[in-house]
Image 1 (cartoon, one colour):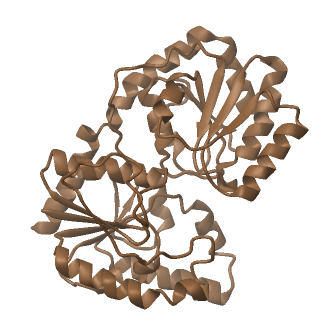
Image 2 (cartoon, rainbow, N blue to C red):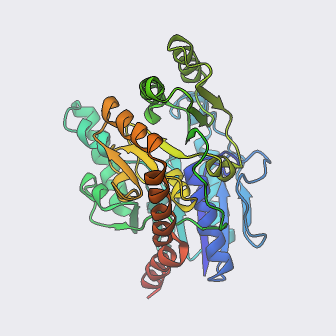
Length: 372
């Protein structure tokens, strides 16, 4: 079995990159598949996450300019080269199944090329807000949605991460396969340090500005606790966050760090994981937190956290965007170490349901059906 992943790059920290590495390694290590990862802009950087040496990496060298709109002239003119190099690579690799992991120009041609090749499209973000907006859009905006619906219907399968997302798709070819996470350590957080942690792409959708507002309420009651944010992202938004930290007199309470490849160590050194995103489909950071026995306090944002965190057992899921409620739950766990430890133990044990041994057979079953 030859499995081909296609994406833009695998050198930056991110949920897509991390879960792709988990799956690719499992396919190569356990199922002994031939695994290929085809990128468009790797730029000779090494992979961010460890990969089995048997996995073959190939970059097309398209190098779209990510600082510009995908549909800017400088990017659009690269499409013919991308298309020709992509077709050439598929002919050389001759995969048995193709998994498209991100959203790029190849979305528009993948379903219509190499008819006998099963093509799977993964979606890693929630379509909640898009589904709301499509009913309010103009005629031409609605036409865009209909074109995308048509293209999605031509993929062999659309892979979604939780059941709630199914209703946001017009296509009938959806399959739900949650993200797996490998528990690679028996280490468990002691939950004794006065630190909370959050991590991810630093962008408005992640709600870090709201998190800082939440923390300004928390430190009124628990002034000896710190919040540490890890990630990389939009410089304007990072500056906004830094200014907000200063304006709320939190310079010694909230700290912004670069993305790290030692996030597990940072989590183990923490006692709470906080999430205040506007939307999350199936956040890997929550899975990582559970595997290390770190309780989670998260907004019930659409649609992922409720599928990962057991409210009142492995953490708290609070009303979406309710600053007062989430601050109260954080303070409750800060002030009650025994409850924190109880949640941490339950989180550590509960995380086993997300291990690859439980999730990856769903992929194998799907591949076997596509072959038959």
